[in-house]
Length: 303
Image (cartoon, rainbow, N blue to C red):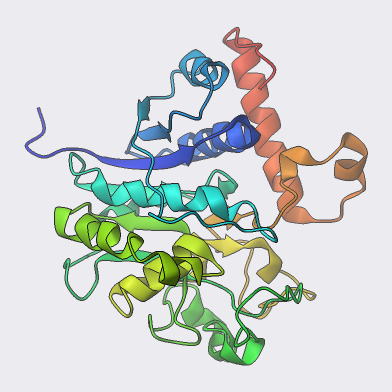
């Protein structure tokens, strides 16, 4: 028996909309031959049908408390952010030595087990994450006004793309905001208390246009370890039309993050066939491989 609690990969699921993503995420992790288990964290809002789908695939799952700000926050322009607050529960999972929390709209392309050993001292570096891209290519008016390519932490890395594959910009670079799609957390009571205390400031919390990731960037300003983009490779960064094409290398990316509204599993078959977008094809190849494996094991629930 291990002397310490395990280290795990995890993803939070609150509704069926993201279930295809979580199932394919879990499959993609398994394909990398990771040495660590994956666990689905679910809240009381997750229906029985979803729990049954997890059990059919023998994916470990556990019910976790719902963590939300004391005052209600509405995101008319980005409803997805209303659920994002619940990810903060990861800081309370003290029974684990380490949790690498992944959003369900991610696809792991290469083994990332080294994240389980990334040094976190609990003071200067409470957790690890990659930067958010602050370029705002969609020109969303509700995003912070300072969000522009000139203020993005990735932009100064363009002249040295080789370094960018393995080194993240300083936590205070650019707008100094992380993307919470991947969080490497060593759960500690002091950190969760800090989170809970800050969540009580309703006026300030409501001012965060980007919900949990802006919240964490403020509460732990400069106290998170920056990871290179390869661990949370935001899909809009890629390619000649991407915000950071000079940095992105398909062969180096370890984990793709399909941010924004339309997820790969929400595309029609015609849209998939007509798509010229390589990351979309990557996701569907992994998803179809998952389906084939499930069919061979007699899992035919349609997910």
